[in-house]
Amino acid sequence: MPWTRRPLAALAVCALLLFWSAGCGTSDAGERTHGRSPAPVGRLLDVTDDAGRPYREVDAEHAPEVDIEIQPDTSGAGWDVRLSVHGFGFSPAGARAEAVSGRGFARLFVDGRPVAELRSGEHRLDAGLVPRGTHQVTARLYADDGTGWAVDGEPVECTADITASGAEPTAAATGPGGTPDDDGRAS
Image (tube, rainbow, N blue to C red):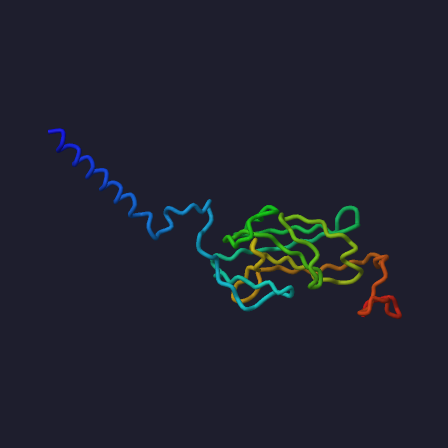
């Protein structure tokens, strides 16, 4: 009767293979995602930042948040910038250029001009980037693929006003043609 056991064993193996493979076809159960979602995160908007990078819309419930705090550094030669993030983690330099929910980097802007890309929540802003007067410093969150995180069409960012009372920077400011204006300031 050994011949009857072999077909039953073969039938049992086939049934197990069919059962096991049922979860492999079109679902993502068998895909290796290394902890990342295989589906795109959010949706790309037609709106872009000043550098032409599109924004990636996510719903407010799952959106990252950022707060900014700026204090003069102890040496008086710059500013200590501290970002507090919620629902967001900084990716290391060299991270894969893809949008992963709640991951990425921050760009720091002074008066709308990009000055730094941050991969952590702390940065020292050189005083030379903040001449005498009142300025707006903005931290904006981006995904690793360079798209800006957005909610309701608005970038996920935070802005703080700072006032520098020190001396003007020593470099002469230039006008649109690359030459100093009559009073030495940019026009």
